[in-house]
Length: 366
Image (cartoon, helix red, strand yellow):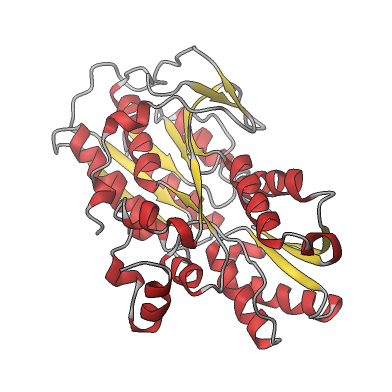
C-alpha cells in the first residue's frame, strides 16, 4: 500500500471547506445519535462499499479507513467489511447482517441512494448511527463526507473546454455521465452542464448503467455511429473506468487526439494521461476522505459530538446532516508529480512501466 497515502495527518481534516451542492454552511454541531455516551475504544465499525470494479475501493478506501479506526481507538477498534459488488439488494442484506450482529456504527457508500433508505432506518431503529460515505444515501443519516461533487463536474467541464479551445465552436462532444442510481453522478452532471452548456454542442449524452466501462464503450460506439467520427471533438467522461472504454471505442473507429476527461486518478487513467490518450482526471484525496469518515464513525460510536463537521447537507429524506466536503484537483500531465506521486498513490515505477517509459520521460517523470 502506498506509503504517504497513510501518512495524511488528522489535522488536515479540519481545513475549512466551502459548501457546495446541497451542503450548507452552519456553525451548529449535531450530537452523536443513539450511541451510548462514554463507550470505550473497543468499537466495531461496519464498512459497506458499493463495488469492486473501480480500483479505489479495495486499494484505498477500505485499508485507509481500517488504519484510521485503529489509530483513533488505540488499536482496540475493528472494522467489519462487506462489498456489494454493485448489487443494491445484496447491500441491503449486508446492512441487515451488520445490524443483527450489533455493530456500533455503519459507514455506507450506497450502491443505490434510494434503495438503501429502508436499511438505514433499520440501523437507526436499532440504535446504530450511520455515516454516508462518498454518496449521500437517503434515510436517517447521521453524518456525511464526500468530495465537492458539483465542483468535480465543473472541474471536468472547464478542463474539457480548455483542451478544446477554438474547436468548441464548431464540433460536438459526447457526454458520458455515471449511473442514474448514484446521486453523485447527478451532481457531476450538474456541474459539467453549468460549464459546458452554451459553450459547446452536446451531440449525444448518456447515463451509463452501473458505471461499467463496457457500457460506456457501447454507448460511445453508438455515438460515433450516430454523429460521424469526424464530428466529435471531445468526450466528457465522468470517471476513468468509463474513459478507458470510451478510448477503446475511439481507437477502434480511428479517432485520435481528442480530449477525454475522467475522475478518480486510477492507475490506468494516470498512465493514459501520461501517454496523451486521456486529457485529465479529477484527483481526489481518498486518504483525507477516509480519515474524515473514520473520525465521524468513531465519534458516533462513542457518543461524542461531530466537531469536524462544519457544513450541513440535505438529502431527499433528511435535512441538516453534519457534513465534511473534501476539495479536488484537476490532474493533467503537468501535475502528476505534484499529486498522485507526491501523496503516495503510486510510485514512479508503477506508473512508468516499460509500456509508458518513453511517455514518462517525455512528460518529465524520471
